[in-house]
Length: 259
Image 1: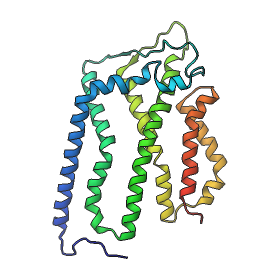
Image 2 (image 1 turned 90 degrees about the horizontal axis):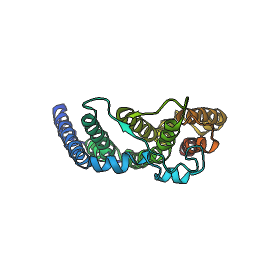
Image 3 (image 1 turned 60 degrees about the vertical axis):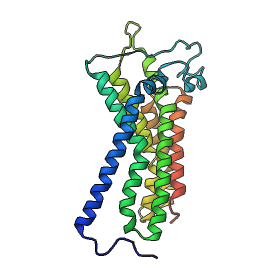
Image 4 (image 1 turned 180 degrees about the vertical axis):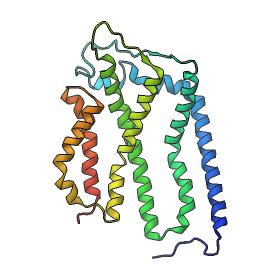
């Protein structure tokens, strides 16, 4: 096992200066990404963020004829209204910031990795590289599932739900963006569960018998969670959300140690 390559004679202030340099680089990367998203936001907003507001969204075409996208619903369209003077400006800024955080995250982690890498042993380096690659892949996969499955299913069901025919739904810009960011980021974080399970297993806190013992309990909990995210009685719609969550559970079971 090779020793860490950190110079033994480097002082605390030397390390602190290195950390300051890394943080400045991370801030610059974030600002650059944010500026790019700010510039392209009008196009992204119309063609990506608002895409689930229209009947032609791929998920609706796939689910045509179900409760989520009933036959003859080609005219589905969500109209957003703005009820606060500065909402459009702050939405422009906040979306640019959050998209910059999401898409710059691998670069930001790589910058931080450059700071801590000299202090790690060879076996720790290999494990950290694997965790970085796997964690990044799973996060973006979770965001994709949120965007193409969870969010459009939730949006269409709740927007078309009627308590009374005399009530017209008008969706505010703030409500739409808050739900859009929350569900997509939640799915991204949920897809990090296998990585968390692997880490807990690596330190001896989690083993495969745990997943086998509580599988039935997990199925019930995941069904309840899926029903909460998409409150519809359509079994197919429920399955759209439940299946990715259950696959995460099984993937976590495969990644942990047997004993």
